[in-house]
Structures are given as C-alpha cells and as structure tokens.
Image 1 (cartoon, rainbow, N blue to C red):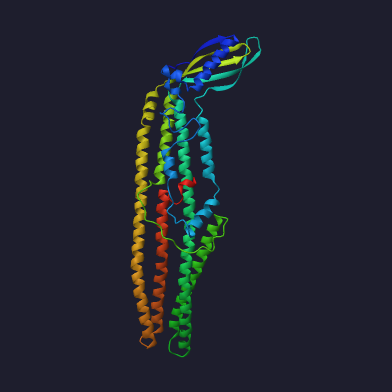
Image 2 (image 1 turned 90 degrees about the horizontal axis):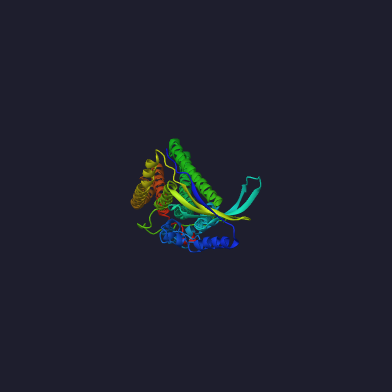
Length: 445
C-alpha cells in the first residue's frame, strides 16, 4: 500500500529584519483571515466569518435556526394557578446538569471558533553537539481540505444538541412534577367520594344491625353489607395513601411547600407545530454526524502547513505537506462517508414518523377518555336517579335495605371512576405537550 510521506520545504533566516518580516507576514495572514492564501486557491483556511460556515461566528456565538426555534416555543400551561406553581418550583430545584452541559458545549464552540488562527508553542531540539536548543514554534495551516471548517460546524452542532437536551430535560422535569400533582389531586377527589360512601354505608350498617336485632333481617344480609363497607374502607385508605405518596414524590423534586395547591386547570388543544423534540434532536445529531464525516474525509487528503521556529539563531521554518494515507479500503471508506448524508436524512424521516405516531396515539387515547367521561356523566346521572327512586321505594317498603345498599355501591363506584377520567385526560394532554416540548418557555433557556 503506497503512502505519501510528509514533505517539508525549510528555510533559514538569520537577520532580525527578515525575521520581523516573516512574523508580519504570518500576522497579516491571521488578521485577514488567510485571504492571501485564498487567492492561491486554498479556500479551506478562511475565517469563521466565511458565509460557507455561518453557524459559528469568530466570537464563538452559535447562530442556529434550531436554537431559535427552541427559544421561540411557548408553554401551554396557564400563566397562573397550580400548574404554573408546580412548574416553577420543580424547575428552580433542578440540578442543572443539562444547563452545565450547554455551557461546556458553548465553551468548546468558542474555542473552535479560533481554530483557523496559527498555533504557537515552545519546542526543544538536541543538536549534534549535545546542546539543547529551545525556540518558539509558530504553525499555520494553509490548506486542510476543510477540516477546520468541519470542526467549527461540529462544535456548532454540538451546541444545538446540548440545547435540545436542555429543552428536553426541562420539559421532562416539569411533566414529572405535574404528573405527581395530578396523581395527588386525583387521589384527593377519589378519597372524597370514598369517604362519603363510607359514611353512608356505615349508616346503612347501623340500620341493618337494628333490623337483625329486631328479626327483620338475617345475619347473611348484614355480612354482605359489612363486606361492602370494608371494601369501601380499603378504597379510602388506598386513595389517601396514594395522595401522600404523590405529594412526597413531588416534595422530593422541590424545596417549596406545595401541599396547599388545589385544582385542575384546562389546557389548550394540541397544535401541529412545533415539531416534536425527538425530531429536533435527530436534526442536531445529524448535523454533527455530517460535520464528523467531513472531518474524516479531510483527513484522507494531504494538507499544507507553514511553520516557523523562532530562536536565538533566527527563524527556521518551512512549508509541510502531510496526511493523505491511502490503503486498500480507502475507496470503501470514502463511499461510506459520502453516504452519511442519506443516512442522516433517513434517520430524521424515521424520527418524525415515530414521533407523529406517538402523538396520534396519545390524541386518540385522550379522545377516547373524553368520550368515556361524557358517557360516564350520563350513566352517573341515570344511576343517581335510580338511587333516588330506590330510596323512596325503600321508605315505603317496596325495596329491601340490601337492594338499596347495592344500588348505592354501584353509584359510588361509577362516581369514583368518573372522577379519575378527567385527570387521565389531562395527563395525556401533558404527554402530548411533552412530545412537542411546549411545557416550558424556550426563552427560559
């Protein structure tokens, strides 16, 4: 396998005037963004201000449509009320890992924004006489096949991925907090239903006990009623325990006291925009993958570097030609890198399909729950009417106490299930908002 060895043309300068001229020439190249080199056809050494690489400015600022989209997103949560209070509390108490990763990515991008400048560092050589000669090495890349440009694109895409991660974690934390709050509110409402049922069944049990003592009812009916009362006591205990657990989990996510929050708020209907965060993440990762492929392709071709070692003896420098190693598998490797764009496009399309399917599934589930809630309200109304009729018939002796108890138990069970449906529908709506990344204002990033 042939290999291109590094070639370097060296020159020596002894006079201080020529040394200064060489330094000024390097300085002019740096200041002008290597414009003189560009005139010779070496456009890969341009400064970050080149329109071909607008994502990263010379100051290290990332100009990204993806980040702008994230920052323009607005939360679907009402600005006031328990939802906003929970969102603010859990956000303030977050560990800030994603924010720290975002800062690190921005610092890396700021460093890469200057990668087109020459590198300066000390160097030491051992002469033939055994003396150690120290000097300052100045090295400037003249032609690198776009590697440094790809490095800047990679750093910018890395900031985009960090921004998506920050948005995703912020939305997920808010959803987790609201989910615990909904579980606690649902448990409170169900416990209120169970508590009323326990009070009513307890009164029925007292009446049944009097009837058994008076010989009007047998003990088998009393045992049936006692069993129903025990089941309702168990439901009440389970609801209260669920409330305590949910509030404990919510309390672990924040340092604020949220125990006094009450109520359920309505949310606006889902909109087809913005795109789901999962798709946005794949877009950012795709841009980073493409930049990584560009760096790999640049490494496969030879590059041109100018260097100068400034020491006591003057300036010793040259122009080096390096890289460009070829092997049997080089062609296949190149084809694989060229196919990266197609792979990124397919990944993005697949991510969009998967996200849309998840959203459609959640929307259908929410519609189903809302239909059940509407139908259940009518069933509950009819059951309540039957309970009133049974009560009147019991008073005139046309219904037994056990029949009245069974009717009331049915009413309490339907009422308890009906209470849960509105919380289930709200949770599904929050899941859709989580998919779209609209539980937190993007401006807070």
